[in-house]
Image 1 (tube, helix red, strand yellow):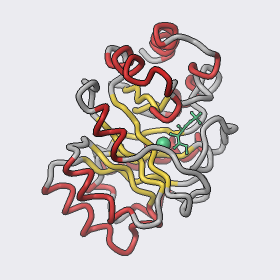
Image 2 (image 1 turned 45 degrees about the vertical axis):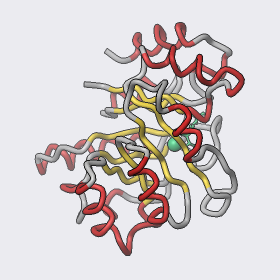
Image 3 (image 1 turned 90 degrees about the vertical axis):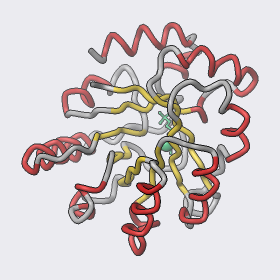
Image 4 (image 1 turned 180 degrees about the horizontal axis):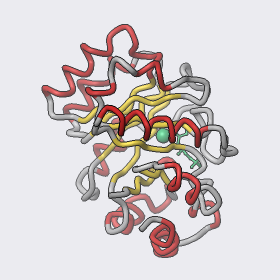
Amino acid sequence: MKKVSVSVMCADYNNLGEQISKINDFTDLFHFDFMDGHYVPNVSLNFDIIKRLNSVMKKPVNVHLMVTNPADYIDRLIELKVDSISFHFETISSQAFRIINKLKSNNIKIGIVLNPSEKIDLLDHLYNKLDFITVMTVDPGFAGQTFIPEMLEKIKKLVEVKKKNNLNFEIEVDGSVNDKTINQLYNAGADIYILGSSGFFSKGDTIEKAITATNKYLP
Ligand code: DX5
Ligand code: ZN
């Protein structure tokens, strides 16, 4: 089953509550980007925003940590009852098993994000412990960047690894998912599609239009 995840960082902040209630009916997940201005040269969403929106959101919350010390964020995310957390591999490599165990014991799903420069083999010791793997199709840190087509091969390789080893992780794509790229991503085998500003929202489309457009591409 293909899933859509809406990147809240790309929503209209003037009408955030209203937008979220409309998105509720359409999205499978809410994607929250956290940045610390250090791991990536930008800042974005934070704990308080999730806290304020928690009563409005009717779908699970995924937090994508683009921060140098993600372990410091886990306790507060557990308190906020998020559904899943995505970590960049290089920021947890020395403590991956400890973090995975902590999340599992708190019923939080775990995903690892691979930057465009990172090969899938980095995760071969973790495949069977992960709920999802996110393939960044742009460098992390900013919305609205140009799609990197070489990442389609990486998705295909992950699909092969999954089949060969009978694994369950879902394959997520983050970065420049739009009407030009979504077909290719679908054909490559992606399961979860993060919709950000270079997608349907950038054209000033309403949520309703985005719903129709996305459904057209994702059976
Ligand atoms: C970027 C973020 C993305 C961002 C994607 O580093 O991780 O989630 O919202 O935005 P687009 O789809 O515009 O590339
Ligand atoms: Zn993201």
